[in-house]
Amino acid sequence: MKLLRGTLFSSIAFLALVVTGLAQQPAGKPVLSAKPVPTQPAPAPTPVQGTPMISPDYVIGADDVLVVTVWNEGQLSGSMPVRPDGMITLPLVGDVLAAGSTPTQLKADLTTRLKKFVTDPVVDVSVAAVNSKRVYFVGEVGHVGPLQLTPGMTILQAIATAGGLTPYANKKKIYILRGEQGKQQTIHFNYDKALKKDDMQGVSLVPGDTIVVP
Image (cartoon, rainbow, N blue to C red; front, top):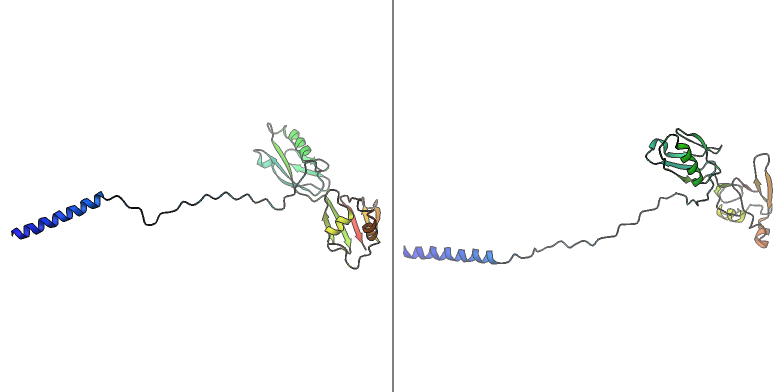
């Protein structure tokens, strides 16, 4: 009986020592610890494709597309094309002549007109699409049809942008039709002569010109 009590006492004492040792042992580090993820810089915003770069002195023309924004007046804001007569139509205001004005001038005009209907209107005008500054190619060029005209573009530059002349082009008989239908001016152009003498490269095209390459 004494032997049994001694064995039990020894077991209890040993268990107490183990528990005490575990309690006193400092907590260990986890086997796996999450490493801090390095902060990545925010990606730069992607530019909106197809939006034209418009200079402050750009003159609005027929077929251009404008975006008119009136702050806190959604019913007065939106995208609107410039009609062939040069006008746009704005709710409350009605028809307004846009062609011939810069976006800044049109903004001022709309602001003045809207003061009759809106308290302290804040107006913004931007050009969403440039369709009025075009020339047109007919005949033996790489790409027949309309071509976006850049400021100061010459006929040689326009031909190059249109894909160049085809092997069948009559380089000496090219001409430009300029002006209104029935009152058009014909400007003759010799491609080979221009390349050799540089005498026609300074002739700039104007919107609406039609370049005919027989």
